[in-house]
Image 1 (tube, rainbow, N blue to C red):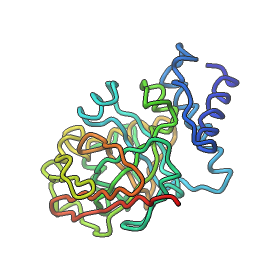
Image 2 (cartoon, rainbow, N blue to C red):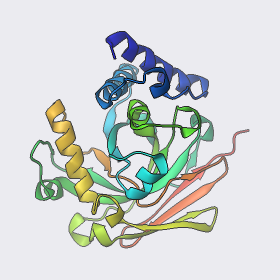
Image 3 (spheres, rainbow, N blue to C red):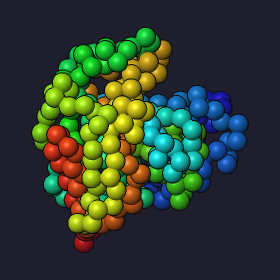
Image 4 (cartoon, rainbow, N blue to C red):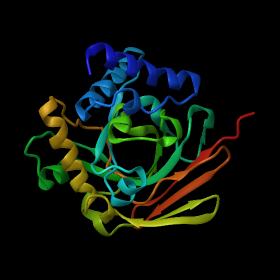
Length: 263
């Protein structure tokens, strides 16, 4: 895609945030678009958000579990940016009107205490960089009609990012085996899913390594204080205004997301 086409698609996606109306799949209008083009579209939007006062607070890895890849019909992970306006306080009302077609998923969030960069980053490097972990709920959303996404669509759409709710119990990495950390997900009091950290590329730490080594060649380092979401432990579930979702993770505690009812 040439520069004009990249800018046009970025403008369409930015417009969807304003209008609340999803756009047709990008790949339909740009069948030759590549993953590289998609990341250029994503970065164009990030530049706009930064110019409008947002701050990059971290990154997310999407589609890092077999369940999510099967659900979304893709075969590789992707990454997106977490901006300051995406973070919502635990157990405080989240404005439902902010989202177009939201879904929610439980994740183990890393909070970095040291820089981490690739290429060549190892699991040992990643573990050393993590200051603590938190239970988290990621609100994924799509500006693409009916979630009809290819890998190009989701990457261009900032990896289908929407929002983040972090729990309030920091746990040192040394105190937990992330692979074996179990999770239950309740929606409006009903159990909808169970999962474990090992669903995320074998271990969420592997996802962090993948991210560092993917961003490194682009000149991007993961910085102290950044929040990294490594990927979902279960499938994603649609949420509606008025819903309450609680993720409980062994040894890490719980985190709740409460969606308001507009009007």
